[in-house]
Length: 255
Length: 265
Image (tube, rainbow over all chains, first blue to last red; front, side, top):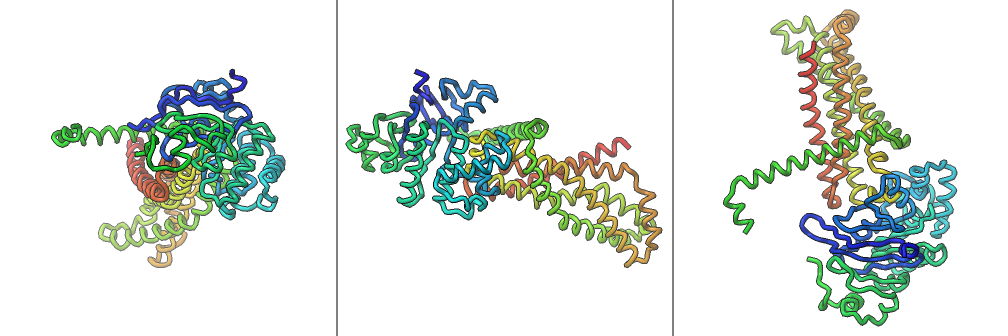
């Protein structure tokens, strides 16, 4: 089954201090598909994503990429596994001390030790893939709008052709038109390039557009999972509450 | 129930305080250990190191130079006006030379660096932490200790002794110019007595201090920035703590090194 399951959270527990954020989470991202994790704020979506990106370590359980436990890898093994991933952060998290093209080429220049000429050439290609003109390449991130920063963040995530992409609230804080454009770019990665995408969001419209599989996270575990089509006619009470944004229902608000 | 017991037990806040202090010392030690390890093991990043050397070293020259020049001049005036009661003006060049090279040159340089560099490092790394740029580094297969901390520590270790050597020269020149233009000392005689008196040990102690201070200034900025939490307010707090811890540790290390140097004449 490893062949199809690119990323697996197995019985993952994670807490901070006394609060338990993830409580034996079981979830799978399948190859070449787009998994969207829905959930209210404070329900552990970000933590689940950061565990998969190797930014946090689980207290118990395993996070497996291509069947290999991230926590049990040597430093080199971990690096090799994570080199096949890319992540777009909620605030883009561009390095403001570097021009746009060096941001995009960062992995090539610093982790893969490419030459600056090659790094720049590949950065320009990646910028074109996210529909940005070459003239942004020498600008500073602070000179770009929020939507353009997100595109640069996406270019940085895809520049080394990763197989597994993580998106942290990709459309939050964007106008509807830019949000659609970002969604289209994410879909492009999955449909055309065969990437596996894992997105956390609370934007239902975006989830409908980019999701193949949906998982609803609440109280630290999966409350519901199924195909994205179910979002149109949710039968599960928790999913129904979330999709329609009802205050009353099985989903407890974060304390 | 637990809260009730704490009220009755005056020792529990004390115990919590001690535990928190131990935890902070442990966390700082582990951070410093990782920082040193990242500095002595590859990969090394040249461009960030050059950028830090420029920011810490070159751009600190004016403030360090001005501070040292005025302090050397004021020191000379103080010795003559206050020290005339014990004929200290007879040994003015020697006292200025000792004061500048062993104490004021390295300490004032370090304090200026704490204000300029520790603050800037803590603010920059703190902002990178709160805007997820440090997480982004990790997802791009780049270790933040190698990419962010090691260049700053190295730059501190290189820049502080160089700046201190310059501060020594400027400070001695400040004392010399007050002595010559204000107190009618013979310019050649003053310079000769300074050079005859100064031993390599005096300058050496100052430069050893500068090396340690450079590490303190860089590491306190990095440490406080790295663990910043909670947006703009957290970054502000990290900046203040970076400057304060750097300054206090500079004074503590100054005493410790002076003591060790005095024990071995």
